[in-house]
Image 1: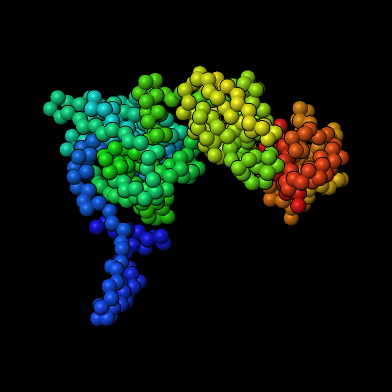
Image 2: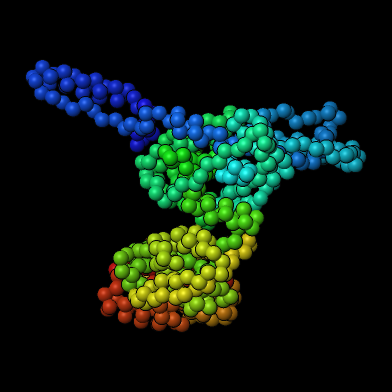
Length: 515
């Protein structure tokens, strides 16, 4: 039986577990004397054996060796200083290389050796991958191959095949390679499974190349789904406690049917080794990217052209959202984007996109990116408490663009003239525009001080920002703000929604309590 980790990370049997079972055994013996039956303790139990499954899928898992050739001068200093020989892939390899090359270059230049011919040296990295098409298509992580100019795919039998890059994507951290199989060694491929069907508690198997040791099998369960580890704009990881270490990157995470439901990509570890917290890109996220890389050699993502922020409880109440906090609040609309053409507005809350529910703002970039460019989809928004459906024809997200979230800034209190909601406010003047470098296009009421003990400070409103709207109505003076706040209080509102602009004109929504 596989060892099962407890909630605090300790593995059974522990000393405490042994004492508990001894005590329970004593109770059972005593009870049996009295003629009573006591049920045996229940322990989590995995599959009887994973050997048959591992044997069936291991041949499709490969090791990846990626080499990058770099130019380096021989070390100077007269003593023939050379860089120590370190194991390939050691964490300190690049550090030593930078140190010794810098010292060598400086020494050579001081001695008039600047024309010394550059030498070639290789930097190696090791990782894992898997074959998805027997014609020679291999999937791995983008960070495994990096900018390598020599990539070798090492099969389970030890044979090596030179690989070429079909395409790679840094945002999802995926790369697709092609190798040419030989007639005497046909390749074995594994299929993708449906990651959406995986539930926390389902058993999974990881196979890869930890620390360069070669094909290794580990098992565990799905610990969680939809993890955001802030590694990129489309984070949606499967978390697993199956042992994943350095070198497992790019390897497959299998379900019990031998289908790939994830691509092992990252670990959370204070030690550098597995502590039972690993992350895999779900197959549902990876497969559309892989298909595009195979077809186009690049990823063509949909683009909506909005800047969004999350909806908290106070914002939901201020907007009159039914069902509480949900959706993605539009804080800005690109003037040349598809959203503008379709009639989406600042203050709209997107709750559904192309039939998929948007539960949080982080859901929207991922859903939009996975939608084909040029496709017309229905976008459901809540506008002033009413649901509105807008058809939108998606553009293409260019490489230089990225999903935009509303900026959040730190408070910086200043002197002021009028106070409301923990804010000192002033009408817009030329002097204030100059003091805070506020663009001419920004209109509204200037925040000149923030009470550090107020909710406004907690929400990171700062002096020099401009209140554009209060309760989705434009304001131009402190009196407008006070009047609107009083009106909302009379309506029984518990919070007020402010549209706040930075000096540069970027806007975001902030909900403040009225109690």
